[in-house]
Length: 376
Ligand SMILES: [Zn+2]
Image (cartoon, rainbow, N blue to C red; front, side):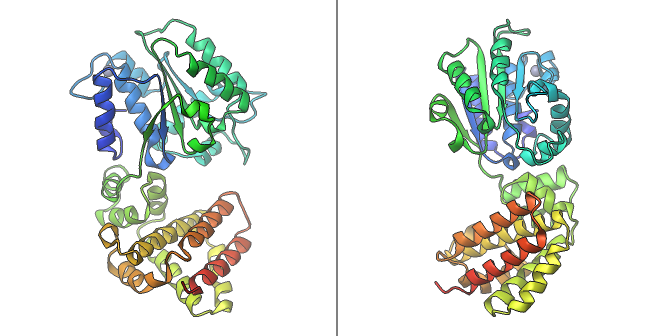
């Protein structure tokens, strides 16, 4: 992947490129951010540029053997480690390298842990990075590099390392191997051993801007400019959410908007019986629609809160959504915003883990309505 193919993050990429050009490549780096923000894209472009033998104008050439092999995730000196299931039967990440190449190619290197577990058919099992994986890394690093002097190890979601694996990795990081780069890509760096994070240089990958998301939606997902702009506003910096919102077609936001405004109206007028009907309707809408709705609602809650906080310039609303949120904004403030967001995140998690939608949304509707009816 070339730098120019990474969604967003122009400034960060400029810094990373400049560091490589100046020979400032720290041996262990921790890329932090949500998968949907494109952390793996950043890592792949970084590694390709680093290994490319004919860099052209700040980009990997795309044609040298290194570039070609990295693009197909088949470079003999670039190793991938990621969470797997059934580690007793299937020793290491290498056993899943076919599935890994497939999901990276299919998703433009933007997918999350759930997407990955779907591909390897994990059936709700939690993936782990076992001790054997650390042994495998040491074995691979002890060979001479095949092409040139460099080796890179990309560890996706190191927070899934078992304790022993983490300790082994720590030993490797304590005594860096000549010419070897470790790139750790983490959504939850706070779950890593502090002795590991303290030995890495952190690269924070933030949200992708709404403008860049909209551009991605048009150029890569074939959305119309109107649908792209609308989806980008509620995608909260994430390509994964952007895809989900767009996946429901252009009319999706209209339904979501109707569902959201109805929930809020019922909430501040305390019409509890109708809240049950509302929950029932959403419960029968299918999981993707449900997730889509909660993410949309989270977006509008955040935007409304920003209006309350007087941060209008960063608000991306317009049209009917804006008109509604302006009226609704006083109901979302410091006294309830955190609780509202956490109720929504909880519903999202429960639905993601196959919770009973009727129970999830009945609880959700009642909890949200109570919070909205609260006076600050
Ligand atoms: Zn190249």
